[in-house]
Image 1 (tube, rainbow, N blue to C red):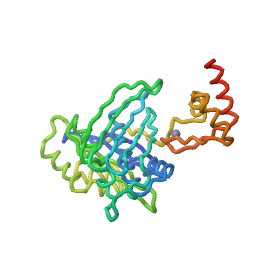
Image 2 (cartoon, rainbow, N blue to C red):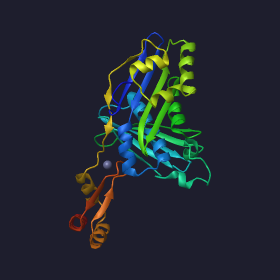
Image 3 (tube, rainbow, N blue to C red):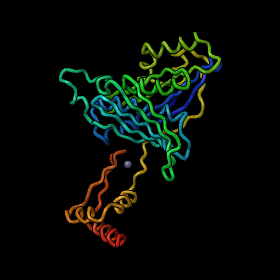
Length: 299
Ligand SMILES: [Zn+2]
């Protein structure tokens, strides 16, 4: 709640008098970057953006400074699923499985979230150590239907009563406001207070507001919580861990026969990072060198 709309961030907020906690995330810039990198259609960008905003909420509670938080969903609908990551520095990346899922719908079907995501989702939330990649914890569950709203509500409700709203608008074909807000009922909260705020989430009031501005002053007003106050803001930003060095290292480990075949083809091999869309070229000379080293090692 806050901030210039060009700053991706997440934070938590509280109403002490009503014992309500809020989680907020703005991932608009990262969504623009990833949607362009992966060439997502507007309907795919909307669902992907909501999932990314949801990852911003998850990251408020889950994940340490030295680990990567992975949010995976396999969807029955034509979007197929998504893989999203947030590392300990607040760097976000990821992709959706289908770039233009609406083309796979029966003709005349509206490309709304429910149609693109389908009947059911299998979800995995994993914490992975940044050095070495050891899995520290993993949680899997299935939900129906499969939209990001339902998936994330299911995750948070498992621990504490939560309502949330995910917003992903577009402007001239690119993501504009990609934000999320959740409310949680803390122990000691009055049922009536939580129910009143939950209604603002259910009737679309919160979603409508997220499309415009989400400053603290506005949210105090919209939620009618005079003592709403925010905790520290944490920066989020697009960022990927891929590099030319890592790509070369992965090629160096391929089987010698495969490397010889790639080198013999003459041109550079293009490697595309599926998380950020960046492309790397590995030339035939490097491929031939890796092939020789692999052969020498296996002798
Ligand atoms: Zn990358």
